Image (cartoon, rainbow, N blue to C red; front, side):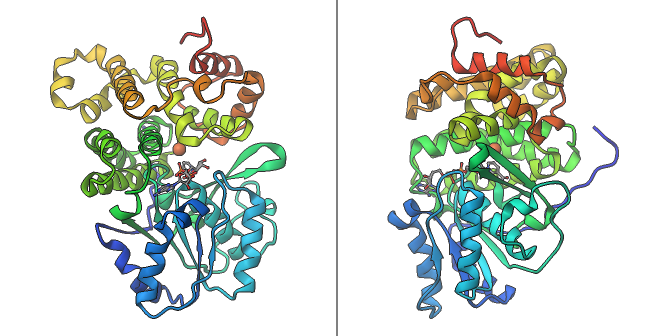
Length: 400
Ligand SMILES: NC(=O)c1ccc[n+]([C@@H]2O[C@H](COP(=O)([O-])OP(=O)(O)OC[C@H]3O[C@@H](n4cnc5c(N)ncnc54)[C@H](O)[C@@H]3O)[C@@H](O)[C@H]2O)c1
Ligand SMILES: [Fe+2]
């Protein structure tokens, strides 16, 4: 771990069973009178968006502009379209109500508006995002997975090139994140499981990536303990408000951790699989995680061993000899995956969700070009990634 480090977490968090009620006051504090709500069609259909509108209407609002046409893994085209809507409707702030796809789309819109450009692609590259015009931004997550409400990252698809672009800037972080247990109670068990495994992956990669530091470690390990106690319960009983809120907190904490220490090889390969084969982010994270841990173990054994106490508890940690702890941690991750697989069908191999052959060469090349690979503590070559992909696919003889 480097002796000098940088840690930034400027998002105001409002977490609780009724924290949504505080939205009008937060908007008032931010000086917003005509926000544009960004959400998706599913959340509109099942009434999750309505619960946010109800809170605003209680305060006397009559008509609130909404854009709900955000697809899973949004694109730069959608971001550009929403930018035009924002201007046309004379809005003065953004509210994202959704999972990572919606939140990252809203971050894209914030970038576009604050930098005064018309096409998000103009902002691809390093150090392109300056402070710019202030666009007040509130995020209300409806999944407990990406932690995007706390991160300086936005992942947005460039459809023509079949790649997921990563934008990284402190100016992307929202002003306020509202974590309310009622926002995730409709999340089906299968998505609860895969998004929760994304959170676990953020925490494990945050704890092991090259920019780790004492503060990101504290957030990451606390998130892991919450996942241990609450993820399976949230999948088994989605109406349990206490565990839903605990998972929302875990997701935000893991987001704050990785926003500062960054994520590594699991995400580099997962982004490539998402861009090329449309594999949902949480599913990709869940499937790849143990294979990448096995790959990294030759140099991360001790750090994985440290995590055993948070993930499996003090008794298991104490009963496991020091030199066995790293291996045991990977086994414990596998054990949770199998329980979730039996409970809600969470896939364990890529071929379960993508029965067609995958061009491993192409995916591996895209993973090599992903920024996340730079902070993975063990260097990975294209052939290493192909071996990980073959094993994760469930290919006969593909072992790691
Ligand atoms: N910016 C970051 O820091 C970061 C980190 C990790 C992942 N990501 C990105 O986030 C995206 C994935 O986000 P996600 O995993 O949250 O899923 P998602 O936003 O893609 O949503 C998945 C599905 O769940 C539905 N859904 C969401 N909330 C629901 C609810 N409360 N009830 C019922 N259905 C609900 C959505 O309508 C959608 O169909 C990917 O594009 C990924 O690359 C971003
Ligand atoms: Fe992720």
